[in-house]
Image (cartoon, rainbow, N blue to C red):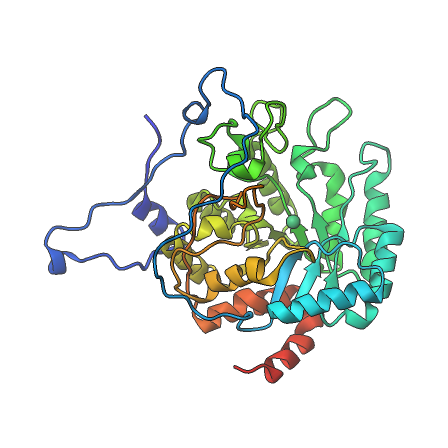
Length: 416
Ligand SMILES: [Zn+2]
């Protein structure tokens, strides 16, 4: 028997309470039926028929919607949002910063966190060129696991972090290679609770700098490659030999192993603040995400690359974000190559409006132009202004107080 949890029990047990109105007995007679969270499909149910292989066929464009649906006019974010998840590589001269600032102004971004600061000489160049722009761009050092199997690595990397923080890096980014790729000499995978990382997490706490951490991956990438897999097109698994970014039976740890190690890390380092990228990759299971946030006060989450999923269940996630309004940060996972209309505007539409059935900010597009991270449309969650301000900038400013004056200034000059 699959395990089925009565939803109301789950919500009553946690601090997460649904306020979506259900008809009461007085209004409609019999009591409303109880809700349940059914289990995920089994791996077997997603498995392709025997002998099937991707044939390299280009996926056609998603059909255009032939419905007249109300659309809120949005030209940029309502408030100066801080995009906590941006990959702005190549910020080593003023021209690169100027291009980025121009893009930010068009999108309505108050500030961004650049996760591609790197380490060493690269980071130094980024920080040096960025000095005149530090009211808009927060550069993070990027964790490098190179040499982790060599003696003394922990101390060396912690010292590099200390140097970076003193030089102006405002946090650290951790890539999903931790957990899914980096290995010990014996071939086992290095996880987030590896004792060699203790000194790293502790150094972030010592300087009170956030750790922006991406662990695990989209749940679809752990399932078999098949046309039934909802990430089939995002995976771009076109050729029979192309299994990039798919972990099914490839020897990688399961999401549960990575999630458990992440819990151990949060528990062992209560003074370190972790911003878990992509809703901790738990967008697929609100029960897990609720328990995670309820258990670890040092965990926050950031929404990038999950809008296509949250926007499929807008009422559910609206309630969630209202409940955890102090723990959710805005992020996009974009870069300077993204178009504002195609990429940031759908984020604003999702967060600010109740517009229905619109194109999500596709992280990947297929060659045919279909949104790879989901062949579907989404609806908005229309956050109230006070919550919107928290998600857009207040929660991020807790970690980046250096940006407060800049955001405050932008608020006063913006038309409200
Ligand atoms: Zn990213």
